[in-house]
Image (cartoon, rainbow, N blue to C red; front, side):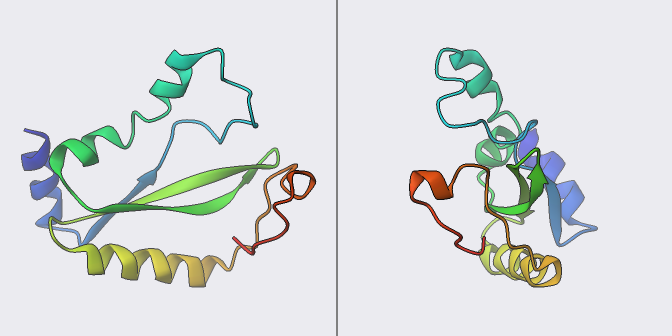
Length: 112
């Protein structure tokens, strides 16, 4: 049923763009004692995986210094379209993000 729902959408659209998670990223070690919250943060990627569709997550901004992910979902076996959409978004957005505290952990600015 999930795959059929996606197939119906892909009759009209080349890709679906959606949040990757329902919240921004957690700070390092923040939710380690709350496994249910950590599990539920994957809820928006589960239908895509169950349907066996290609998808990619790209950064789309920061909220309170923490990254927000944008998920690009494509038709079955159309990884190339997913990559083209993700690349086009990254080029258009021209984001240069550094999550809070990354430099202190030795991450530096990677121009995400």
